[in-house]
Amino acid sequence: MAGPLTATVVLARCAKTKKLYGMRVEKSGNDWVRTWAFPIDEQKAKQEGFEANKVSGSMNAVDGYPGCPYCEQSGFVHCSCGKISCWSNESKKHTCPWCGQAGEVQIAKNFNVKGGGY
Image 1 (spheres, rainbow, N blue to C red):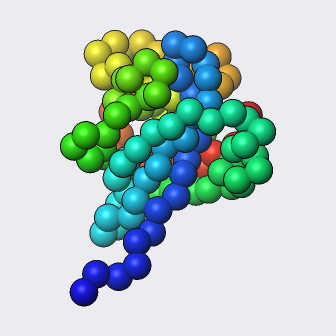
Image 2 (cartoon, rainbow, N blue to C red):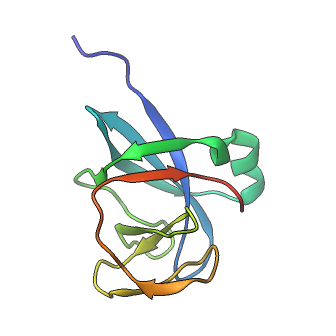
């Protein structure tokens, strides 16, 4: 029998539109998997307390993960500012929609992310 489901929402921004969205992640062993993404406004995200959610480990996507609700990109970038944004998995260059920092994407397997600060 499986244990209780552990799931949470981390916040991300669309790299194209800069709009906020939530990524639902579920605990799978020692890691997390991205299962769903949905648009959310900043006030609602704050009311739900999503800015306080923390996730550590990998965050692979399940089959059928819809990606960013605005541009449908299924990849993501974790900026050195600590925030997440969608990514096309094609371009090596990226500009963070949270802080404006631009640079080359480095591939990583594990993350420590915390939403908020929007």
